[in-house]
Each structure stands twice: as structure tokens, then as C-alpha cells.
Length: 357
Image (cartoon, rainbow, N blue to C red; front, side, top):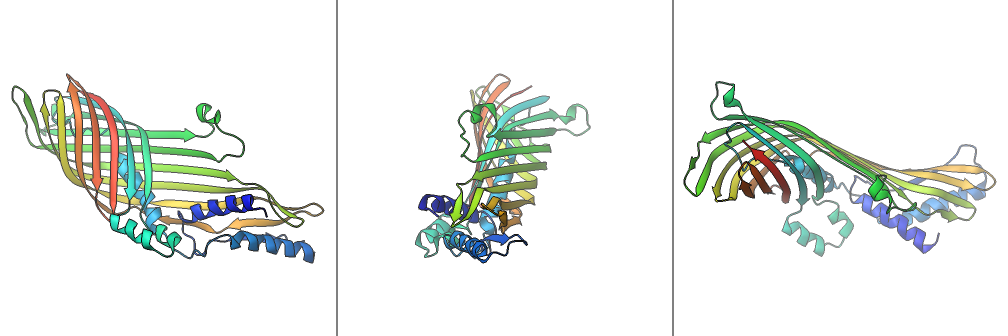
């Protein structure tokens, strides 16, 4: 097997090993039942040995990375949030985007840089990211039709769909490049209650103190197909090999938040504290496809890759929230930032535009 082919295959599997359960990670090439030629069986065995010899001796349980991706999906749940513009008279409608990132603590990064077994250490840290590209939230002052003063009810919907087959991306893709599909879907209900009513002064408006909660469902799906060059060992050729990576994250989040905001002229500043209670799981599966081929015998073996696993998000995710925004009449622009500080670090960053009436 030439060096270029071997390096491409090895780097891919090492990368995937850092994102799944792998104890240990191995490629299995199983001869077909009718193959009994000793020379072919020996070539198949050597091909398998060559593939696995290139892999590091990984015998790990990298739940940190798997959980980190699930956590990032939870952090990205808050697109189009209206937490900085509560206390409106009747209706609030907003659209926005949100990026969630899960990172390890500084001390964990330091340990990795000093570790003798780099792969084992990096596979155990919490890391992941997720994006909710388009979100819509609509809120209404429920006191207009319910006998509950200062109660606000809302609904949130969001989705993302990015594919290498799309008209834009396909123009930049070649046949030997990985193909992928990434999508997210979110739906949820929000309830807020104004604990302390705000007040207006000539240049300053205080929006009071508002407590909020709700229930948010989010699904993330990622599929990658990575084609590789043919691999050979004597007369046996691994034709059209491709590694497939499939990930599905399902989470249910219950946000618990208290926020306040102040508007000075057109500038709106908000701060808050809270926590996200998160439930669900991240399921990953990795496989390998292709034909193990012999010119006179045809397909002589089948390849398999034993990798995959499942892990849920962190249950309790305390957070600090801040927003910097601008309001021009009923229209507002807002940049929400949230810092999570459980078991490492997490950040969500978004952009929102909307109108409150």
C-alpha cells in the first residue's frame, strides 16, 4: 500500500476515533465463505494487518467529546431569543441565528499538552459545536386575554439545512471530496413572567425583572461519506472504499432564566442568570464500505469498522447571559451572548432582529 493511500486512510480513522466510542478501533476484513485459496486468504489477512498497523493503539471511552456535541446542540437552542426585550405591550416577533460551542476547561487543555498519549487525552475532553441557522420566535402579552397580569407566552421554531449536493456547494465539490448533509430542527414553547415592572424616564427605560422558562425540542443530523483511494495487497484490492459517519442528536431543554434590561436612547443592555436542564442523547455510527476484490474471484471479502456510541448532554448547565442591542421605534437588533460554566466552558453567540408592539 503506498504512503499516500495509507496516510489518507489513517488520518481519517484517527479523526473519527476521537469522536466515537472505540475499544479498540479496528477494521475487520472477513473473507467470503467460498474463498479457500491460501494465497488470497493470506493477502486479505495482510491487507487487514496493514490497515490496523497504521492506527494508534486506541482503547478509550471518549464520552467527553460525544457529550460535548450534545451540549453544543443544547447551547444553540436559543436563537431569536427575546430575553432582552421583555415587557412589551402586545406582540413581539423576532428571527435570528445561534451558534453553540462546547469547550474544555483551561486546565484540561494544559493536561493535553503535557500528556504522553495525546490521542487518549484529546478523546476524553468535552468539545463540540452546533448551529441553528434560522429561528423564529413569536411572543404575546397573555394578560390581554387571560386573567394573569404580566404573563407572556411564546413559541419558537428553527431549522438548518446544509448539503454538499446543494446548488451552491456542489459547484465547488469534486468527485473525490467528502459529501455531507447537515440539518437541525427545533420547536418549543416559552413562558415569561414579569416579577418587577419597569419604568420610563426621559432618556432611560428599565424593563424590570423577568423570569422565563419553557420546553424546547431540538434534533441535529449529520451524515458524511468520505471516499478513499483504492488500497491493494498483492492481487487483492480494496476497491472504492468509503467511510460513512452518521450522527443524530435529540435533546429536550428546559431553560430557567431571570433577566433584566435597560435602554439608554437607542442602546439596549441586558444581563441575566439561569440554567438549562437538558435531556436526550447523541447517537453516532461509523461504517466502512467498498469491495475487497480479486481479478479472478470477484468479491472475496467484506470490510467492517467497529465504531459508534451514544451519550446524552450534561443535565445541568448553569449560565450567565448578556445582550447588546439597539432599538429604533418598534424594531430592535440584538446580539445575545451566553457563557456556560459546568464541566468546562460553553458559549452561545447569536444575532437577532425583530419588532415589539
